[in-house]
Length: 474
Image 1: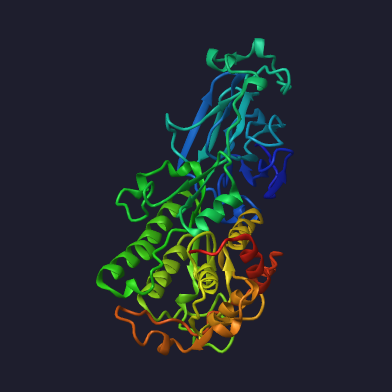
Image 2: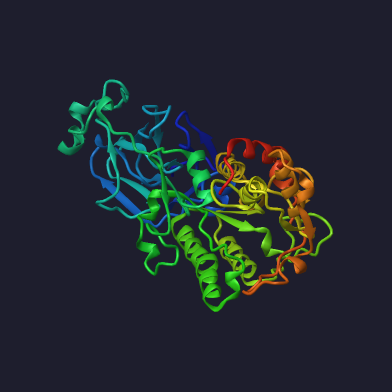
C-alpha cells in the first residue's frame, strides 16, 4: 500500500502565480483515492477559479520520457494519476520574472497550478506514468504559444536523467534558446467606447501598451448579433465598458428608447455573458440616474435603484446584467466632465461671449473629471479589489449646476452674478421636445472606494485645474 500525506495545502513558488498543492490521498490494500480537483476547497486556499473546460491525460511507458517546455495561452492544473515525474516550469511571460525556473518531483499527492504563459515540462521517473492536466481553453491554431529548448544553458534545468539518455521528440529538441524566445504577452484589456470623453481618458491612463486595445462603436458594436465571435475572447482578461447611450432627453422618444435599451441594457447583457463564458473581468460604468434623487443623504452602493426616466431605467438594467457575471466592477459616477463638449466648457464659452445664462439650481451632485474616473478604474484592477459596485465621483461637498456655473465664471475672470439660478421646471418650461426627469440628489457616497486608498480630488479644485488647462469652447 502506498502512503501519502493527507493534508490539503498550498505552497507558493518563485514564479508568480505558480502554486504547488498537497493533495490528500487515502490508500488501503485495494489502492488509493484522492480528490484531484475540488473547486470549493482549492479556491478557498487561494487558487484562482480558473474555469477548466478540458481534461487531458498523457500516458508514458518508459522512465526518462521528457516533454516540453511549452507555454500556452491558458491556465493548467497538472498532476499525476499514477507514477512519478520530475517537473520543470519556466516563466515565459513578458515581465521581470521572465526566465525564472521552479522544479519539483510530483507524485499523486501533488498538483501544480500553472498560470498562462509559464512553460510546463516534465520527465518521468517511473514507467507507466499517467500525467493529467485540466486546461481552461481549447487548443487553437490561432493562439499565441511560446516554447523553450529543454537544454537551454541559461535556465539549466537539472534533469535527473540526462537529455542524451532520455526519450525526447525531435520537435522538443528543436525549440529556441531563452535568448530567442518570444515572451508570451499578457491577456488583453479591451476598452469599449474609446471615442467618448471617458474613453479618451482611459487611453491616456492605460497608454498604448500592446496588451491594451481600444474600440469605438464603428469597430466593435456591443449591440452586434455576432459579438460573441467578434474576438478570441479567451485572449482577454478585462473588458472596460465605457460605451453608453447618454442622450437622456432623446431617450424619451420612441427611437431613443430603443437605442438606449439596446446599448445600455442588451449590450451590457451580451458583454456579461461573454465575461462569464471566458472568465473575464467586466468593468461597467454606471450613472447616478439609476436613483430617483429623493434621498436626503448620499447614495451608497447598496441603495436599491429607482430610476425615473428611460435613460436611468436602461442603465439600471445594465447594472443588473453586469452584476450577473462573477468578475464584475460596476462603477457608478455622476456629472462627468472630460475632453469634449460638456457643461463646463459651455459655461466658459457663455461667460467669454457675454451671455448671461439661466442655470438649474435645484439639482445637487459632484463633478467627476474623466482622468480621475479613469485612474479610479485602473486602481480597482491593479489592486484586485473585491468585485462589486463602487461609487466613483469627485470629492468635496455637493453643488448645484448653478453653483458650478458661477464657479466657472469666477475662475475665468467674469462676474458670477451673471448666472441666474432657476428650478428644473422653470428651465424646461419652454421646451419643445421631450424632457427626461432628473434626480434632484446625485451625491454618491465614496466611503467604499476610499478603503482601497483612493482619495477623491475636490471637485472645486479640479474644476479650476480643468479650466486653466482647457480653452473655452466656441
